[in-house]
Amino acid sequence: MIKMERTCSSLKCDVVYNGELIGKMEGVSVTQWFLKNHYNYTGAFSRFITDKPELSRSGIKVDIIFNDRNIVAKDACIGWIRNPTKNGTFSAKSIEYADKKNK
Image (cartoon, rainbow, N blue to C red; front, side):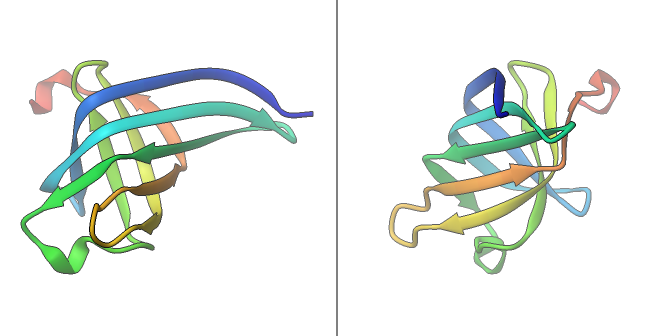
């Protein structure tokens, strides 16, 4: 049985790759759902803006920081990115509270 738990969205999120801020995501939403004894986190974004075009691709693992919610989608794997508009999907390994000391 799939059980939807909660959803969260943000207009702008920071994107971190290997500890380095590489860009922003706009229009981000994430859904937490429960299936087969563990939580899954899937989401979508309307635009991924980065200064490093080589990192704007599917398959990379990033941390997505929801600054207005103080949460982080850890190890989010980009599922796909549509080329001209840069919108796409991701699935995260976990969601954690953001550490305010690092800001």
